[in-house]
Amino acid sequence: MPSESQLDLTAEQRDICRAVADAANGAAIKVQAFAGTGKTTTLAAVARACPRRRFLYVVFNRAAAADARRKMPSNVEVRTAHSVAYREVGHLYRSRLIERSWNWLTYLREKMPRALDSVARFGRDATSAGALIIRTVEQYLRSVDLELGPEHVPPWCGEDVAAVTATAASFLWQNIRNPNSTAPITHDCYLKIFFLQDRELASPETIVMLDEAQDADPVIFALVQRHTGIRIVVGDTYQQLYQWRGAVNALDRFEADATQLALTRTFRFGGLAAQWANRVLAICGEQLRIAPAEHSTEVRIGFAPARVQALLARSNAGALDQAVAALDLGRKVHVMGGAAPLVKLVRDAYGLYSGKPGSGELAVFASWSELKAAAQGGRSGAGGDPSLQILVNLIEDRGPRVLDTCQRLEACVDSPDAAEVTVSTVHKAKGLEWERVAVCDDVSPFVRKAEGKPKLLFEEACVMYVALTRAKAELVLHADCMEAVDASAGLMGIMEPLPISGAAGPPPTAAPRRDSGAGRDRRGRERRRGGMQTDDWGPPVTIVYDRDQGVGTIPENLRGRANDGPRRKRRRRGQRERVRPENLP
Image 1: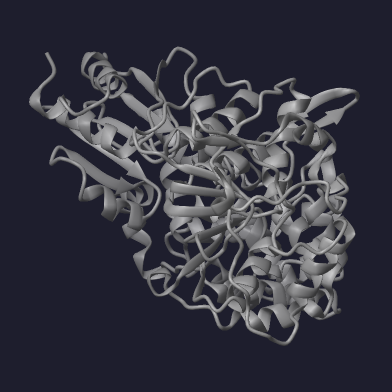
Image 2: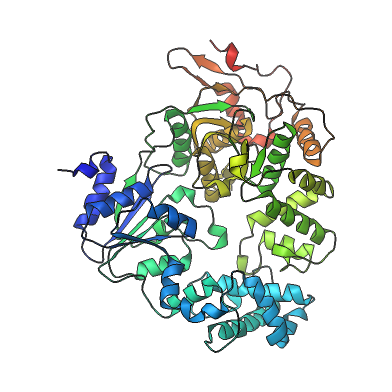
C-alpha cells in the first residue's frame, strides 16, 4: 500500500519510488521525464520513500541548489558538483580562486610571455593569442581527457597553430595545477583536478541523483558514473540543446543495463499543446507520448504580442527583432539574460566585421574571416558553432543598421518582474514556463531531404519541442512555426492535421515612430514573401471550426503546401480567408 505521502503521486512516480527502494547497491536507474512532468517533485518523493537512506542531489548552479533545498526532505544533501570538489580539493587553492578565466591573460603577459608570443607570431595580437590559449584550457576542463592536446584547440585553427597553442595551454595548465604557483584558478579547474584524482562524489551508501541529465557536463556525468552506490539520472532527451558546446546526454550514455522508467504526465499544459509536442516526438521516432494536464491550453495560429507574456525566438537575431517590435508597441520589455550582454556581443561582432580587433567574447578571433570559419567548422570535420553562424548572418545581412537596433534595445528593463513581456531565445527559456507564450517566425523545419531520404535534424527538433512546451494557458504559433512542424511531419509521412483553438487576434496599432533597422528588415522580408501583412506577423490562416469539438484545424489543402519549407511558399491576395476569434461560430 502506498504511504500517505504517496497518495497524490501518479502511478509512474510511485513506480520510480518503488524501483529505488528495491534497488541493490550499485544499481543504475534512468528516468525519461518529459516537459513539466515534475522531476524535482518525483526525486523528493523518492527520498521520502526511503527515509533511512542518504541522498546527494547534484544540480548545476547555486540558484538551482537554493530552489531544490526548499523542496527536498532532510535526508537529501543538495550540492553542485563544484561544491563537493571544493570541499575536498578546491579549498587548497582558495587564495588563487577567480571567477573569470579571462584573468589568465594578465598572468600570461606577466609570467608566460614566451608562450604568448609563440601563438601571437601566427598573425595575432597578444590579446587574441591569449584568448586562444584560454579557450583551449577551457575546452580541456570540460572534457574527461587526461591530457591536454591539439584536439582541445578550437577547430577553426590550422594544425600548426593548434600544435603551438596546445603546448602553450599545457604549460599554463601545469602552472595552474601546481600548489606553489601563483597562477589563478577557476572553479572548473579544481573540479577537473578532483576528477583526475579519481575521487568520488559520495560514499557508496549514498544514493546520487542527477537532474537535467540531457545536458550534463562531461566531467560531472563521469563523476556520477564513477559512483559505486545507487545512481539515478533524470532528464528529457528532447530538451538536449547544447551538444555543440560539448554537453552529453547522460540518458543515452548511461549503462545499457540500467533500469529505464518514464514520467509522461505533464502538469504544465493541456491536450491541444500536448498534441503539438507529441507530433515532434513522433517525428523523432519516440514511442512514448506526453499525457496532458487536466486543464486546457489554447493553441492559436497568428500573432498577438499584446496577449502574451513571453516571445520565444530561435536565434539572437530573432530575439533582437521581437524585442524592438514589442518596444515599438509601447510594452515594457525584458530580454532574458539581459539586453546589455546581447548588445555588447552584437557591437563587438560588428567591430570585428569592420576590421577592428576582437573584444569581449570575440577576443579569441583574429579577424572576421576566422569567426566565419569557426561558425562553419574546421579541421578533422569538426562541426561549426550555430550561435556564431547566426551572428555572422545577422551582421552580414544588416551591416551598420544593426547598431540602430542595439541602440533601441537600451530601452529594455532589467528585471522580468518589471516587464510586460519577456523576449528570449528558446535555449534560454529551457526550464521556464509562462501562462501565455508566442513562438516566433525564425524556426525552421527539422526534417530535410538528403539524397532523396528524410533526414532528422535532432537539435532543431529539440528546439521546436522546447518552444512548444513552455506555455500553460495559451500557446500562440506564428504560421511559419506551424508550417515548420507540418513540413517536417510531411517528409516523415505523417499527414494528419493538428488541432488549434482559432486565430490569434491582431496586435494594437503602434504609435508613429522613426523607422528602425529591425523594422525595415522585417518589412523587407514580408515584401519578399508576397506582400505586407496587416497583422505584422505572418499570413492570414483559414480556420475550419468544429462546433462539436470546439476546436479549429488548418485545412489539408493548405497544410500540404508547407512540405517544401516555409520560406519557399508564395501567398496571393485573397488566397486565404482571414478569420478573427470574434467571427468564429
